[in-house]
Amino acid sequence: MASAVTDPPRTPGRAGRNLPAAIAVGLSLGGLILASVYSPYRWTFVAVLVGAAALGTSEIVRALRTLGAQPSLLPLQVGGAAMVVVAYRYGSTALFLALALTVLGLLAWRLADPVRGLLRDVTAGVFTAAYVPFLMGFAALLTVPDDGPRRITAFVATVVCSDVGGYVAGVLFGKHPMAPSVSPKKSWEGFAGSALACAAAGAIFFWALFGVSPLLGVVFGLAVVASATLGDLGESMVKRDIGIKDMGTLLPGHGGLMDRLDSLLPTAPIAWLLLTAFVPLP
Image (cartoon, rainbow, N blue to C red; front, side):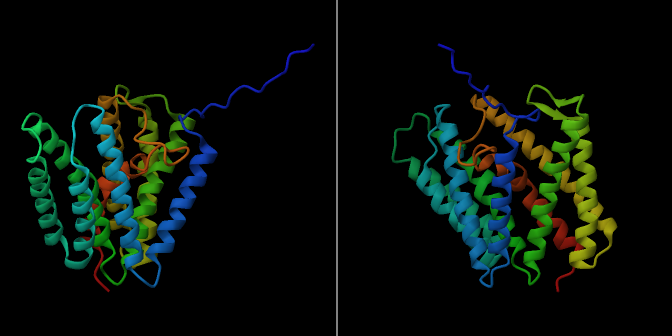
């Protein structure tokens, strides 16, 4: 009896991801962002940010617990939601105040447990609060002006260009590893592709969306590629330290939600600062 012939299992492409799944998930996330940010009700996008902060916080806490740290999830979730909401409602000063109150809440909550491990647990909680909802708050700040949807578009789309430009250039030309001990598949050629894509995107968005000099858009794009790359490498370092490949399994082809937010989160304050400085309020 002839043995059955089975197809070999599919493996990720050269860049280490399931490309069709990654594209489908990326387009779906992009559609969600656009639909919410251009909704007649600006709070719709704020609600999306609150949900993303909650999911990202849960992934980070779950990962840190594998190292023995026990950051308190409830005060992180409550404080994280508060950071995003007060940033949108009351501005940057309120965002910093909400972070400080969240840190105090973490400390007070942890005092109910035995003292042993307190410093480790509170430090893990402060790291999580600063990394996820605090940085997410700057995306909320970007939506406040009347042209907030366009500012969010420029911010998110330029980060996406960094990812796409780096992926394409890395697959086609990547030969020289950028940080082999942290992210072996990231190459200097890929970084150059990211820089070119972001500079071009920044110039186009600044001219088309805001009527501002494309040269300022180039500066914006180069700042974005620097922060996005550092964010990507930074999360890779955290994952290697913890000993995991992905922060979760929520998004097929990407991993966890934090594996998509790793470039966006550290770029949000940079984008808010530069757009505030370069683009006049309408």
